[in-house]
Length: 123
Image (tube, rainbow, N blue to C red):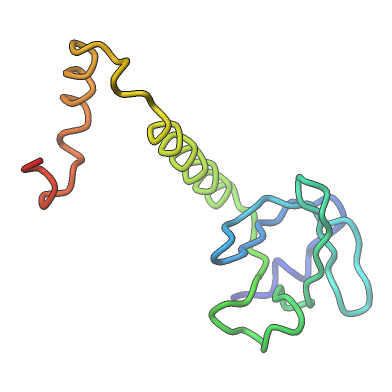
């Protein structure tokens, strides 16, 4: 990771916290110490990161380390798209399919059929 953007961070900047298995969140830089970057999540939790953007005490740049990522316009757009897809998928799982009229089900099927994985199309 290029550390140049980390060196230019200032209080109020947005960053993406990559929490690996726990997902991602857009947080705000709230302060700095001599060795740490302190960010605050939208839920109000503060997290500490070393100046290299990795969480302290996780064995360095390991595959499971939490880390900061630059909140570029492209990264923010990708974040929002991923979140939208996850929320929509969750809503579909909660949908009461038995209550959807048959004509609407047929319309839905026409829309989603091209995106169903080949191995699942026989269902």
